Image (cartoon, rainbow, N blue to C red; front, side):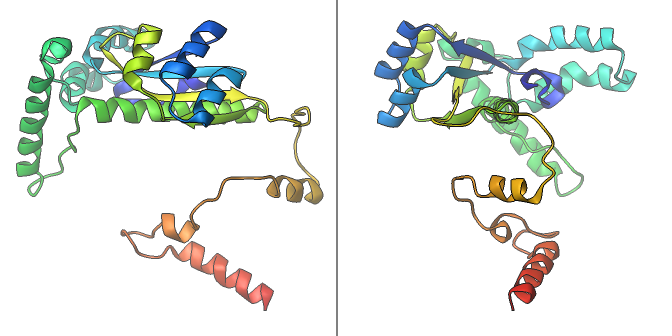
Length: 250
């Protein structure tokens, strides 16, 4: 399911490393993880998945272009602009490959020039929002990581996304090339004393109520997160639901 994660231009700018070797996991825990909790999870969880983001996604374009052409699902107009559009909108400059030798400044300059260009035209016509390649790639990795956690949960597994670690040390231990970032690590396993998972349809109301009582980390109220039509405007659906709850309670 994780491999089906959507991505910009279908470039799939990510890789994932499954850590199984106890010695490597021990080094990751000791030398890169921050805080006791993350250190403990790195060695105790059943599996550790390290997500890597490609900071030079243009190197994937030719391969993706060939795959798209073989699949025959895209229109000719899309295929005609795929290479140029993907290079422009991912925030990567032509010198991004020189990142390890100081070319990163050129990447930032290119992004700044593109942003200036789109900002000038935006009042006249819709223009894309420019972001640097790290932001673009990390965003796509986040979608893939979320797909993974949903798939794991569907199979009765528990997950914990971790960002409290020294990415430089982590990349060194796992021999991740400079071309890639390491924005997320996901610990995966079974909850302690958790009953065996049985995949079946939940039909009885008692079962639904039991699921709703399971321990969950707190979340902001829906009205604090979802708005209607414009930012900050209350969503009428939530207001109606709240009024219904209050009327029922009264």
